Length: 161
Ligand SMILES: [Zn+2]
Image (cartoon, rainbow, N blue to C red; front, side):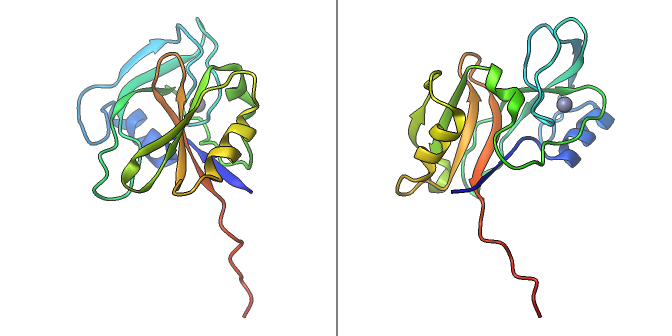
């Protein structure tokens, strides 16, 4: 089963960098030098503590209309970075304690996996294979904050005539 991992979209991250306010909430984003590894929710790389500058703001993860996705604090690089757009699981996230929530329709959490000894790919595959699971939300297993969303990759769209 193939899947895609995506953090905060490029346009949303760039807007926060430009306006310095939280999308949808309007309160100020806070800039600081990283005191921990994060990660950045845009490029899905860890911060270098004491060196990287980052923005802290409130973010509400995407969900289907009507779902009550809980907002929470997230960090992104203060300077522009490229939103993660590769296949597979982001290599730099493996350094972090992660929790994977299986989400069903309406954003309901129907299973949780947070097993440090088991590769992220395997935990994701197991959750996506369960009945009713539509996507998986990746969270920081210690801080609890949203990191990324994982969806099953659909079949390739035919471009034939
Ligand atoms: Zn970044």
